[in-house]
Each structure stands twice: as C-alpha cells, then as structure tokens.
Length: 153
Image 1 (cartoon, rainbow, N blue to C red):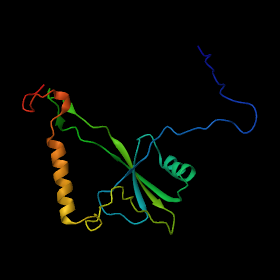
Image 2 (cartoon, helix red, strand yellow; image 1 turned 60 degrees about the horizontal axis):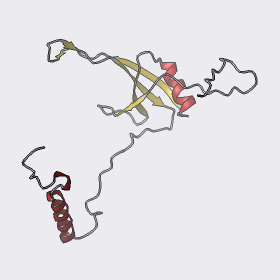
Image 3 (cartoon, rainbow, N blue to C red; image 1 turned 180 degrees about the horizontal axis):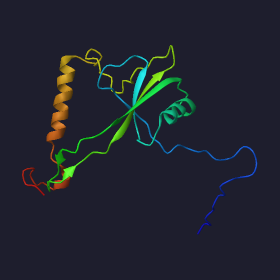
Image 4 (cartoon, rainbow, N blue to C red; image 1 turned 180 degrees about the vertical axis):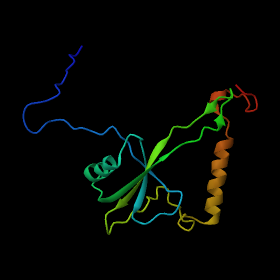
C-alpha cells in the first residue's frame, strides 16, 4: 500500500508549485432578448460579485471587460410535486458582461444547419440508402433465439 503524502500549506522557495483554481463556475447563456453586440450573458452563483466576474474573465480567460451588470433571478415556487408539496427551483444570479471598446461578442453556433445541397448522391442513392437502413431495422434480433418481436421478453 502506498504512503499518503500530505502537502504543507506553504512551500519555501519561489515560485510556488501550486495552481489555485476558483470555486466558481460561469455558464454562458443564450440571451432570451436581443442584446448589444458587445454584451454576453452568464449564469453565475449568487455568492459571486461583480469584481469576481471581471477578474475571472480578465485573468483566467483573457477577455477584456469594460463593465459588469448583475441581477438575481428569483425562481417561482408555484409548482407542486406528486405529494402536493411546493417545489422551488434554486435562485441564481445573471451577469451581463460588456466587452471593451471595439470588441464584439457572437454566441457560438454549436449546431450549424447542414446544407441540403451538400448531401452527396442523387435521389435514387438516397432512396436506396433509406431502404437499406429500413431493412436493417426489420432484421430479427439474433439474441432472441427465434422468438418473435411481439412476444416481449
């Protein structure tokens, strides 16, 4: 069995060999309403302050920040569960980050739409491909041992 090593809080010498990571997580959110080109919206923990947001983006992510505006989103407790108890989603804070002058923010397009013209092949090839996939779906499962599909196991 290995020996457990406990590191001291402070190490002599320069530089220190530790990396300190933040306890906060910032989530980039697609805004519901149209915003200016230089503004991004983040969902952050309630404990996080405006200077924390600014330092996080400037020091860790190297994003030039001009201003930070925050608001707290109070969630409703009007929902009820199956035992008729009130259910409340947790509250969270929203930060609107305005980038420095000359910077613009575009929300990343994670799922780009595919062009219909870019699909290779003619209409017959597409139909044949569809029929082959359909035949594959209709094949009997060899693990069932010849038992029909309508008889559930």
